[in-house]
Length: 393
Image (cartoon, rainbow, N blue to C red; front, side, top):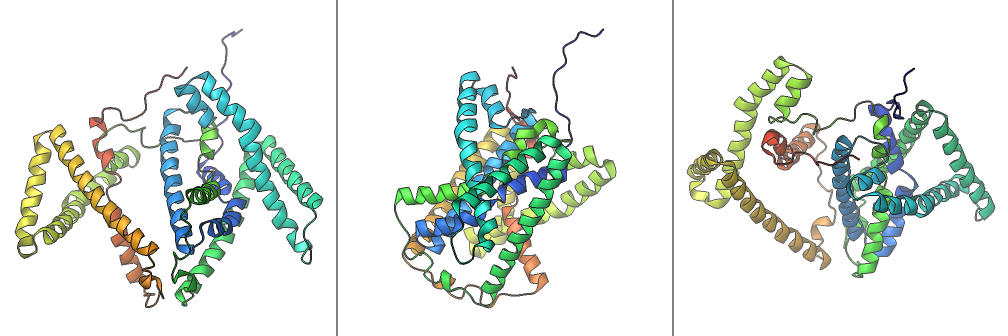
């Protein structure tokens, strides 16, 4: 008889579609339909409201990327509780669980359930306010139903989550498409003097950010069921330098890796580097930009061939200079907008091209400007700590 103690382990039954549906389904909830009007009323202007929504979205994206890496390092279900337990200890993990279970989660779920119930019963009470008892009863029934579904099994839970995600996504798609059509047709009245009436109160701005972040909440949900994912691996799994080349060779074989390397080395990278060098040179010394471009490329090649420390020092200095330049430009732009210089926002979509080719080229230009986010994966083996090293108790 085998007396060896066996660890309780959850079944890995959540795939890609289920995981995406879980995150999207939780994020696209009642908050996204409730918060916009509250944010607009609090901050006082549509322009500032859009800026706060964009800033909150950026914060949510950065946090979700961090959690994706955490999920590959600590492959245990539990989300924040497990991460706090493994890094800070039992006391802080207990305090988090205590406040989360007794305060944070119940209050959040109650708000979402009441919002759902209020919108669900509204068509039946068009001429009067919905009775509080009916709203609360529908909200309670919704919570009980979801609890039962999640207690049955993972497959039924994922099926319901996927269906609800599709319905909510379609609703948002319809709203977004109608909004874009109205903008193209010239409905830009709210963008004229878009920042007029913006509140300068710190507390109001903080509350507006809170409302937006609450609407974006849900990006960390998948980390609560890490052990139930079929393939939770991400970037930290393949700890080899080479970036896309290594990932392709490890997943698709030598042929596809060779084709990628061939086109990248002979076409993509040289063209990209030439464009960047010429752009830099044209802005630095316009009359002699072609010669300066070659000098710039040669200088960077020499710097990178000397040693890693020197190369990183030059990279850090250039990064700081570029960041400061962008910061000055951004702050100057925001100041001008707050002062009422919104002439470019009046009829902002007038003259928009509807050509698919033109739109595609515009997207290409923007994506090329954002290029560089994956460079660190090309020097994975040169990193001091490519992943967070934690002692798993």
